[in-house]
Image 1 (cartoon, rainbow over the protein chains, first blue to last red):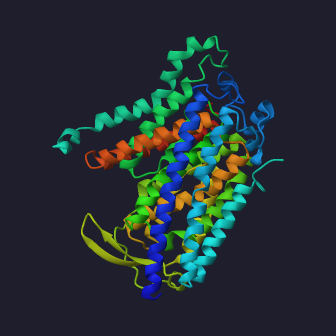
Image 2: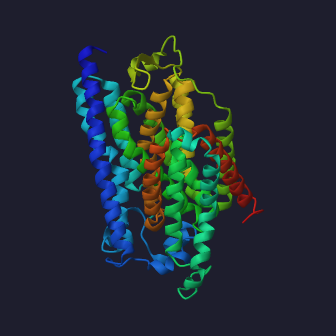
Image 3: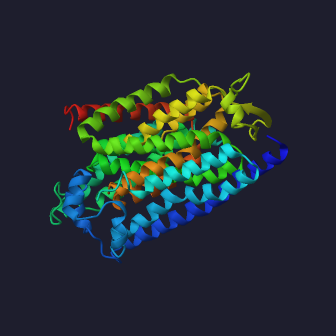
Length: 139
Length: 324
């Protein structure tokens, strides 16, 4: 690796850190705010809070069957429900590595560091695949 | 001065851990009467468990940092063993606890040069792909089998923590071809000792294979995998200890993200369990980080190993339906 490449790579690490800091802080803020709205009762939940103790000891399949909560990305249609709204913050936290990887890709590309362009691109594919619900989401 | 104040603090830490184990029962007992009217199955009000969870996670966060473990590995066996939540939801929350911790520490570790992006990304790619497989397998297994396997893994981790050596500055004579091709090397400036050391790694193919297995375990049990990442990076691949610890933390931010998505898509993330856990653990970890310099870390580590041993046995006996 040449010195010029090394400089670019160091820049990639700094850029990744910068994006990760912004993304994770934003995700946490959304999570805490939506949870406060949920437990304070400002937004009505899909599953009433006092019914949770009869449900949270059930396997997830039983919980979904009883509550009618959708799997996959179906929760997007229920964002007006306090408990479901919390999933926005959780999804943001689980997604905040994606923009970081996309932000450093051009730096590796400019340094002609093909291996790391491929690694970043593959990691993006893995995260998008995980998020897609193709294997995790029920239908 | 502070060291003196805490030097006889063994009893304090024993008390802290006793509180940690007693907290769920204590909270449940106090509010049981008030909850009978609400119709909860065991007579406990709904808010008691999230509040108890917050307190326990706060305490876990305090002990996790001086003990040198991530919160996730403590969270799943302890909350799974002593709270009424199903393991599906506990594992979903455990991943988020580990993820939130990794995300909050990651930027600073990268900026300071402790974590290394070039070392992390190839290993994280393999582990994050396999964690999806682990999560799918884990959610398909019955709770009894998960408890049996979790108990065995936790007891294995306890043994690893007891036996694993550490090498602050491992000597790597020559990097392997893959490490050379990917330029997995760097210069580490240790602020504590003032040393500046050029490091490189070897046995990269073996490291990649081990990270493949680590990813499966992380996804299957909702554990942060720092307990496994650090020995592989440090003892197998030869990265300096501090680089290994920091890079491990950063790798978790990618591995746990992909596994967390599987749990989220399957509906196995309940905000009422996940959010108090994440917030409690993060607040506790901040105090733990401040106490790091003044508490006897070796003692805390021994107590955490004892706690893990107890929680691992509890999961195992639960799986064997001996102690339900």
